[in-house]
Image (tube, rainbow, N blue to C red; front, side, top):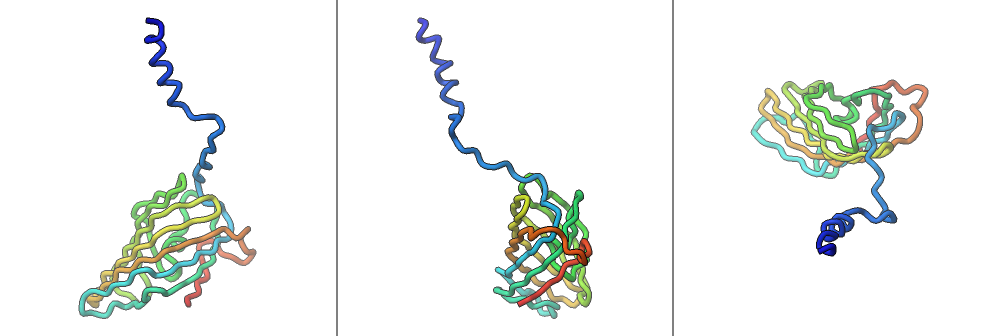
Length: 171
């Protein structure tokens, strides 16, 4: 009878973790402030409609961007959109190691709307996300594009860096 009474305790003891197991490092709460370098590569590009799409970034197009990230609640939209876009966040979740956001954007020379979404992961000094963009232009051209973006913190912000302004190089 006593042996039967011990069975629930034996099952409960087997559910715990062994003290010698390695646990994964906790996700970073936020990206570390400083100078960041981001590299993107277009992985998908589709034109739809008969109009002029206003943009042509074929699969394989690469770009790099360097920008200063300050301490604060929200990152500047250029971090996720790239240079040359004026954006505002629709949804914004960048914490606990996860990136999930949407933005409404515009760009000089394009008449219409550009919607972007980013989803991925980060640690304090690195980030990786997928950026989807869709255009709906008044000239009738539409584009759906996807890019893979990776980034890393390279150190303190450059003395001449203006927070929120990046330098973009395409190749």
